[in-house]
Image 1 (cartoon, helix red, strand yellow):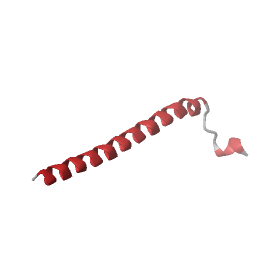
Image 2 (cartoon, rainbow, N blue to C red):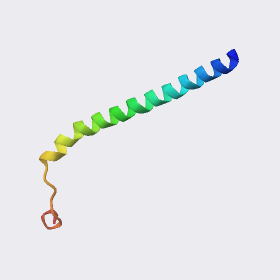
Image 3 (cartoon, rainbow, N blue to C red):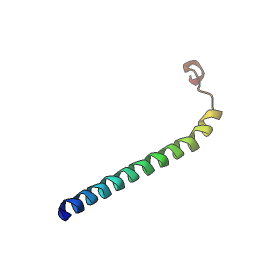
Image 4 (cartoon, rainbow, N blue to C red):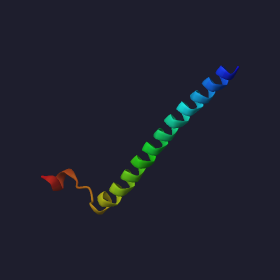
Length: 52
């Protein structure tokens, strides 16, 4: 019985760590995207006629 409880605790720990790493990587990606977005906002996209 104690062995099953230990296995369940280890599984919860692994799943929790995986979830935390996934969450933190998503937050870092969102932060990088938010930092890049204002720079590209200043530049207006050019049409094909203006590029030639």
